[in-house]
Image 1 (tube, helix red, strand yellow):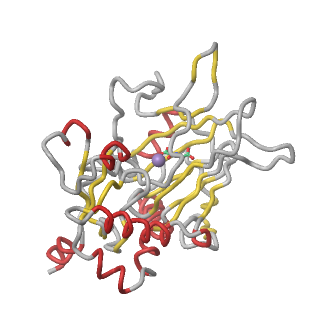
Image 2 (image 1 turned 180 degrees about the vertical axis):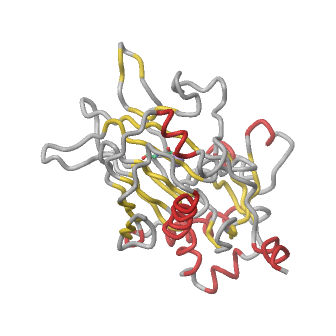
Image 3 (image 1 turned 120 degrees about the vertical axis):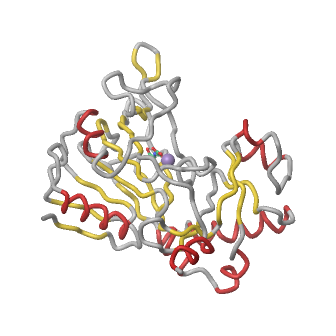
Length: 294
Ligand code: OGA
Ligand code: MN
């Protein structure tokens, strides 16, 4: 058994009493999965995870999503683990610098974005008073949907939005429909109200980093509606900030939360994180969920 300490915010909980370097029994895996579904993001302090053990832990919940074979900063000993870091060694960066510094859900411009991410903290920056820097903020997509005004709910119902890996370039064209070039540029229409594949809860699935436009809507109206949704999603009072410590394993559900790295540190303060993700499935909206339940 383990202990769950929920944050005072709509998402986030600490899990105590588990050693993630050992295999978990099936009941514990199921309970961690339920806890993650409920809280959206979980942290486990004081873990000792080599990259191989980190992968072994995550594989209890699904299939690793391999990185592009040509992607830099993957570890030799665990190719599905990527390094995020601001550090340089012999003049070369040791990891991806400045990853995720705006609100987003990972790879939402792909047809099948990841299910969970699992990050392990190797080095964490701190200020002179010893306070941890380089935190990661989270908001809950289901709480955001539940608390949305009836008027905004009605405006997004049944609609999709276009997500693009390079949103700014896409937005500059003022397009609100996909076109034949989108295969190469990675554009994907996603339901604005996404139904969680495990819990069936509805969540808001548009984000500041990748959502370029609401499909088929007048561009000005689309910009204004997206802005209203972001104002609601990213309100200060619903944010949970994870303050990293070395040895943390942080796990989030990319359907249930959006996240944002805080860039409040600099060298010589080093941050180094080992990141791996699990394969997800194609997002679906309310209509299909209703069909499935019928
Ligand atoms: C990510 C990401 C944020 C962080 O790994 O997908 O956005 O705080 N990371 O490192
Ligand atoms: Mn991310």
